[in-house]
Length: 260
Image 1 (cartoon, rainbow, N blue to C red):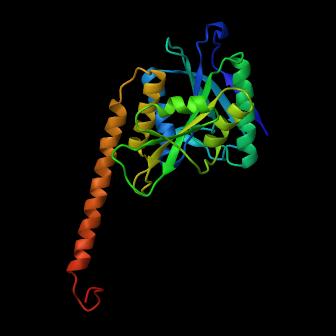
Image 2 (cartoon, rainbow, N blue to C red):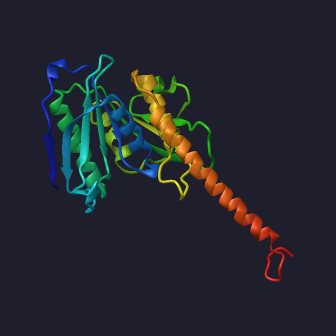
Image 3 (cartoon, one colour):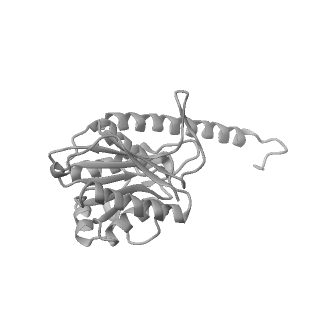
């Protein structure tokens, strides 16, 4: 299957400082993608790699009238606290073969580009619950017990004791760790997906807060907080509409009413 990487600039491999890869694919509530995009924007990370893969869906993207094909992008930020690479995209690979092939080739490419210096692969996603939380918890799992324990020392985290993580969010860090590239970690923020909300910035904020604490990322949460307020406004509006509708049903005591 076609897989091609285009470099936007060269990096000084000798100067790399304990680089980490943070992964945010689109998924439920766009929780992971919004989290990674928020950090990329805040740190002004540079667009480093463009990745074409023929297992992305055949859907062109349009932004401000400009037509484009789906690709994955890698951004890079040099820091004193450790360099960061970010992997994100508008779509995930679609087939099981595509997920595994992208994972294998991506790990091989990053290993070669960085001369084997990647210290950790950290993917993010959403964990669906049947309740709403004021502060969604972050559930953690990984390929290395010591690394896992270090994440569990953060506030608002707990170990994921069991379950399945579908798609590249689960496969990429698992492959990286089990194939000897670097320890893999997956962080899943609690979310209750609702049909009137395409985003769950509250869950994304929990992920970002965990990453800020663990990797000492210097950034504010103003933009995410703004999106949380907007989401709460949409939810409150929907709730009021639902209550108004139900009040109308209860007030109707006509012959066709179910209330007798």
